[in-house]
Image 1 (spheres, helix red, strand yellow):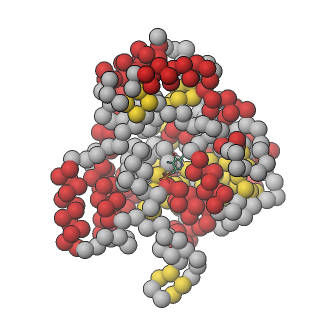
Image 2 (cartoon, helix red, strand yellow):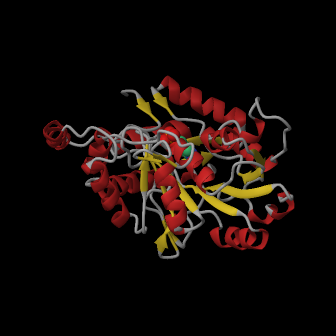
Image 3 (tube, rainbow, N blue to C red):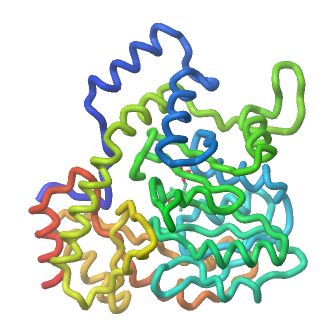
Length: 357
Ligand SMILES: *Cc1c(COP(=O)(O)O)cnc(C)c1O
């Protein structure tokens, strides 16, 4: 078999991208909220059914800007240990302390029944992740946040297009962030976005992402989080194919589900959600079984990834370690299998055969 990785970045037809390059060459507008970026924001607003969306240079800076714009600049942030490391590092870079609350066994999202016992007078916010596009218990989180006057940020990096209870998942919380990195379902090469529902927060983000000034007037210490016209062009091209991408992923997802032995646990898809098939996570019996299967797949040129390992509460550079037994044992046993729009049926069949063996 040819080398198969956990994902393969989608690329649109070359001519589609080239047509946008022509526009850039004609306008000489390369970055700084150009016409293509403005157009992409408008299209995404419609596609994701949100009132506003601000594209930034990546999904990590989106998390940092969300914290900053919501005035979470010190104190504790309750978060999940089961995510990509950027969820935790964004909290650390904003000089806050991540407080890990363990996850649910069946959704891999933060266990909302354990949030309140982690709240202290220093708690400022909850940063939860809709991991693999599975919605968190947003209603429970909203109630807890209201009761304790906390801000809520959802890292929705995996949740492009996911709907929950008939509305866009992006519309929950004070802010949701997306990643448009090349490995994500929808991408702009590098990129990310923030959706916020208060005008004040939206205005603050749009100021902060451009150095905190408008012309000669300086309002706050900002950062450079701008996305370029080249990124916007890739997004505009890819957006045209995003429904096809989700459909192709759904078909491979269903094939995996049918062919893989039932003894390999897969989380069930929330019935109130419209899923996006961004990942195909599988839980093995223990770490040894996982290593055996990884070895066998690697020998056949297949490279799944340990999404997510280690459990973030065990990052070696954290001060003060909190135990999260569920996340820690899931992290040791989980693999994401290759899933992307271009994966072939024969390849999925072969991967399942190797695993089931
Ligand atoms: C990819 C990812 C990020 C970071 O996004 P970048 O665009 O790569 O900076 C943050 N959180 C999660 C859960 C991710 O998967």
